[in-house]
Picture 1: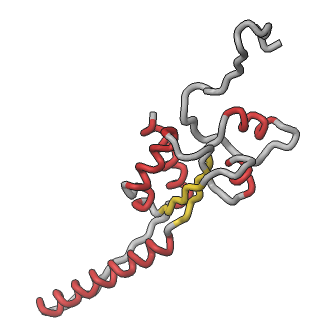
Picture 2: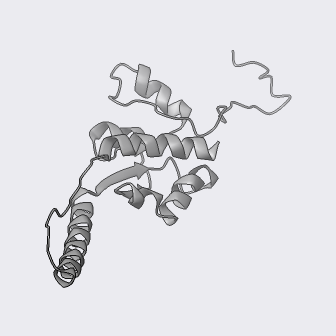
Picture 3: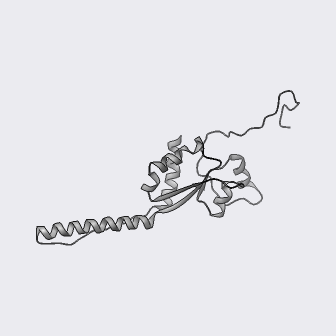
Amino acid sequence: MKKRIFAALLAATTALSMTACGSGDNTKTTSAETTATTETTATAETTATAETTAAKEQQTITFVLDWTPNTNHTGLYVAQEKGYFEEVGIKLDIVQPPEDGAEVLVASGKAQFGVSFQDSLAPAFAGKSPLPITAVAALIQHNTSGIVSRKGEGMDRPK
């Protein structure tokens, strides 16, 4: 399940930030010494250009959590620690949610991704003023929210 979530997040962020670039050296030389010098110089220049291009093309993505870091967020932190986001040109900033939740930060454009509770998302999608957000993945298979009452208090049904 964690691999699927990570794959979905990675695919979405990669689609947003993917670009292609290339560089090459077509210089022809006549002597072996000049060829070796040219290849060394071209390799150094290509490496420097690739590093500069990668630094310029790296996209910062803000990901808002739904609560303090916990087991639901493990995939994000592991992928960040292993450098998976950097490999595809993403600098991931993981932030704590504000009091009004992750969906508000995403809707306002201050974050690109966020995790939220199903109970918060339903009103965000179906309220009088729905937020301009889209659900892209589920971290857990079932809603973990519930309503309970003490036994013997006369509350046997939601009614």
